[in-house]
Amino acid sequence: MSSPQKNTLKHTLSCPELTVINLPEPEKSEEKVDEVNKLYNRVNISEKIANGVFFINLIVSAITIFEFKYQDLFFIINIIFSITAENERRKSFIKESFNVNLTKRKTYKYYNNDEQESLRKMGVNCFENLFFTKYIAKKMLITESIKVFIIVLLYIILLIQVENLELLVLITQTVFSSEYFFKYIKFLYFKVHVTRIYQKLFDIFVTTHAEDDKVTRIKILDAAMDYECLKFYCKISLSSRIYNKYNNKLNKEWDELYHSSIVYH
Image (cartoon, rainbow, N blue to C red; front, side, top):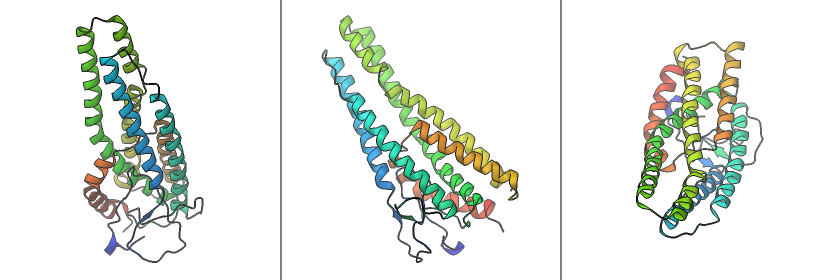
């Protein structure tokens, strides 16, 4: 990675996760490379389509007694794309932390830290990702909660206004049998546990400045595995809009935190 004089290395993903340097001792180019990002682009597109189908289905159901049959198909496609992307990300995580070649997909200059390949580097990389993810999830909570509130409010209004029992049953099935509310609950679960794991690593690297001993390495491994399991279970796609909007701000804040509190002096 770069020297302290060139210490602002910016994330370039729609979902800021761990990546890898695939080139042995690459030249000190400033150009960033991230082939794994293409997989997350597919996830974002399929999720937008699935959400769009849900809202179309809801609107059409409120107008006529009709229901789209393809919503679940888009959610399944989204899950497949998400699993593929997370598998590559996990391989990249291991490769970046230990310089072991597990994937052909290339990324370069993703992390803003100067750690040598080790279990400590794995922990710092994970901490950096959590730093970004925690902020983005906090911003996403506002918009996601507003969407759910609007859906529930419209449903209550329809319950009061609509007298057609068959239409009410169809609307109820559309709203509550969908993946949308379950995704929102998973998002809340994801956000809570991202904060919890972030605090684990904050205590290790910032609060206590723990020595690189056996106990610390076990705690780092526990936190990293905890985060990987959380991502795989929840399959939350972080907002690329929020990420792009606050990327420069977050990179600057992380750079300050790393060089003031984490890096060995």
